[in-house]
Length: 353
Length: 287
Image (cartoon, rainbow over the protein chains, first blue to last red):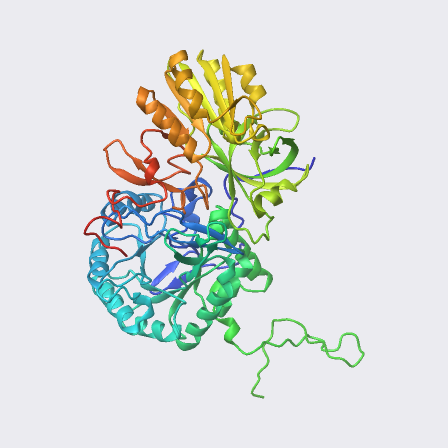
C-alpha cells in the first residue's frame, strides 16, 4: 500500500528568494492571498486546519448593525463548477462581532478585513464608526451588493451614484490608515464606471467580484431550488467573468488597488487575476470543499511566480496588459539551421527600434 | 478538532440498498465519537462538484494492519454519490472529519432506546456499544421503507436487549412506522433516554412521542450542507436555545445532534418571525 499523507496543518514551504508582500491602499500585507467574505466566517473554523495568520488577511463575513437570521432554507444548490447561495447575510450584528470575532482575530495576530453591509447610507456610516480604534482591523471591505431600502430595494452596487454615496460616507467615518475597498457586483453594464464612481468617492481600492445573480429550478418539485428563489453564483464557473472585470478595471484605473476574487481554486488561477491586474486575491467558494485551500493557493502561487523568474510578487501585477515580451536567446540560432529560436522570457525587446 | 486526510479506499461492500465504504484515514479514528460525521470530496481534484458530501460515521478502527480506518454508509442519490459508488480499493479519497457534535452519553447506567430510520441507524450502532460499555440497557427500533433499506439489524440484535423492526411495505418486521411501535416500547422498558437518527419526519415524530412522556431525546438531523465545517451557513434550522430564543443554528457545528424538544420541526425550511434577527419579523425589514 502506498504511503498516506496526513495534513492536519499545512506545512508552509516558502520560496526563499521571493518577496510575496503586496500593498493594498496604504497598507502592506505580507502576502497576497486572503479569504473571501462569506466563505470563511470570521476565521475560527478555518484556524482548525491551518494557521490563519499565515494568510495576507481574513476577510470576514459581511456584518450588519443588528443580529440577522438570514433566509429560509434551502440556501444552497450545487451547480456545474459552482454553487448558488441565498444565505441572506445571517450574522450576530456588529456589537457581538466586535467583541467576539474581531477581538479573537486580533488575538490570533490575523489581519482582519472587515466586510460591512447595510440597507442605507447611514447604516454603513454607523458600522464604520464602530470599527474605529479596534485592534486587528487592517482594512474595510464595503459590501455594496445590498438592496437600498431608501431606493425601492435597488442594489447599491448597480448604481454609480448610490455606490459613491456609501463609499464617501464610509470614508468620512473610517479610521485613518485603514483602506476602504468597495466590493463590486458583476451584474452591471459597465463595471469600470461603477469602479470609477467609487474611487472618485474616496475608495482606496476595489474588491472584484461579488457573486452573479442566478437561479436553479428543481425539476422534481418544479419550483425554485432556493428558499430565497434567486441566489449568488460563485466558484470556478464565474472565474472568466471575474478575470474580465479585473482586467477592465485595471485598464480604466491603472493605479487603483484591486483585490480579485471569483472561483480561485489553484495558484495558477490566482496568477491569472494578478496578471489581469489584481494586487491580491481572495479564495472563496473553494474553501467549502477544501478548507486548506487558501494556504495551498499561496504556496502554489509562490511556486508559479518563482518558476517564471519573478523575485517580487508585485512585478507580476497587471503584466498581461503589457505588450508581449519576446526573448532573444544568447545564441539566436543554436541549431545552426537558419531558424532563429524565439522561446519564452527573460529579455524584453525594445519595440520602438 | 477535525483533520483533513488524503485517505485511501480499503474496501466497499453492498448492504441491501446501501454501500458501506471503509477508508484508511490515519488520525481520524482516535478523535471520533458516536454521532460524528465525515465530509468526503467527490469527483477528484478537477471535479466540477465543489462541495463535499457528508455522511454519519458508522465505525472507526484506530489500529490494525492498515492503520486507522473510517467506515460510512451511503446510497446513490446523485452524481456525487454515483462517483463515490464507482470507487475501488486503493483509490484516493479526501476526507475531513470527525465533524459536528456527537451524542451525549448518560452519566449513570440508564435505559436507552435507539431509533434508526433507513441508514440513519449507522451512527447508532457505535453509540449502542458505548452505552453498553457504561452499563446501559439498549433497545432498538429500526425502520425503513422496505427490507433492503434497513441497515444494521444484525449488529443491533447482537448488542441490544431487544429490537423491533418496522417497514412501510411489511417486507420485514411489522408493517408501519417506527412511531407506531415506539410508544409501547418506551412504556414497557421504562426508557430514560432516547437517541434517534433518520429522516426529518421520523425525528419529528420521535421527538413528539418523547416530549409527551418527558423523556430526553437526542436526534441527529440530516440537512443539506455545503462545507460541513461551519463557514457557509447553509445547513441551518430553527432551534430554541437555553435562553428561550430561537436561532438559525448550523447543523454541521452546533449539530448534527440536537435535543429533540429544541428543534422547531414544523418551522424547518421556513423563517419564523420570532427567530432572532428574523427577516420576517413583524415590522422588520424584508430585504
